[in-house]
Image 1 (cartoon, rainbow, N blue to C red):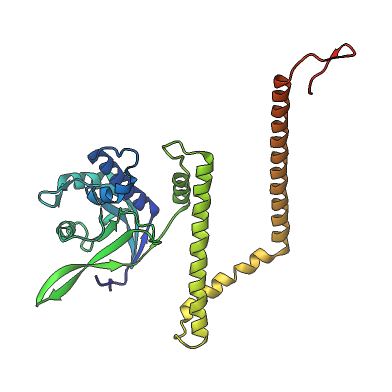
Image 2 (cartoon, rainbow, N blue to C red):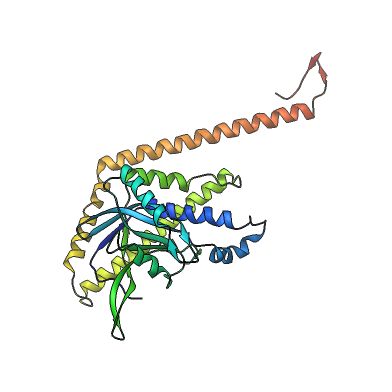
Length: 313
C-alpha cells in the first residue's frame, strides 16, 4: 500500500486509542464466553475472531494540520456493510453541543488491515467530510512490534486500467498529549490487576515499562548518532533542519550539569538513602521483637534462681 501525498500532518491523542481499545474489549467480552484458566494459548486466535467495532473520530483541522481529539461509537449493520445513519446524526448533534469546535474528521475500526468493504463506509461519510480519515487499530498482540498498532489512512483517487478508483493510502502521524491525558494514561497504566496482583507484581510491571522506555530511547539515540556520523563523513547529504533540531536538543543538556542541580540531586539522593536505611532498621527491629516473643512463648518456664522467674526479654 502506497503512502499519502497530501502533505497533511496528523496528530493523534491517546484518548482516541483508549476509546477504541475499550470499545473492542467490551464488544469482545459480550460476544464471547469467558476464557477458562489455561486459555492463554488461544488468545491470539480469539482476538482475530472478535467482531470488528466502528466509530467516528472528531477533532479540528487547522490548515494542513489535522488533530484528532476524541471518538464515539457507531452502530454497524454487517449484512449491508453500512452504518446507522440516524444514530450517527444524533450522536453528532449531541457532541456538537458539548464540543462546538470539534468536527467529524473520519471514522475508526479494528483489524489487521483495511478491507474492501471499508471503502463503502468511507464513501458514505464523504457527505459529512469530503476527505475523511480512517483510523485502524490492530487488536492482535505482537510482542515483537515496538510501534503502536495504529494506522491512519487517507483516500486518494488512482487511475487503474483507465478507471479512476478510490484507494486507501497510509499517512504518518504523531502522538499529541495534554496534561490531563498524561495523568489519565499514567493512572490507567498503574491500575491494580483484576486478578489481585501483588504489589511486587505491579512494581515489576512498572520497572519493566521504565526499562522498555529507556531501551527505546537508547536505540533512538544510537540511530541519530549513526545518522550524524554518516552526515559528517559525507555519506549522506546534509539536512539543515535536522541539524537545527539536534542542536536545540543538545542545548538543553548543560542545564543538568549546573552546580545547583548537583546540590539538589545529592540532597534528594541522600534523603532517599536515609529513608531507606530508617525503613530497614525499623523492619529489623520489628523482626527481632517477633523472634523474641516467639522464643519467650516457646521456652517459657519457671526457673528459680534466687526466687526469681527468668525469661528472655
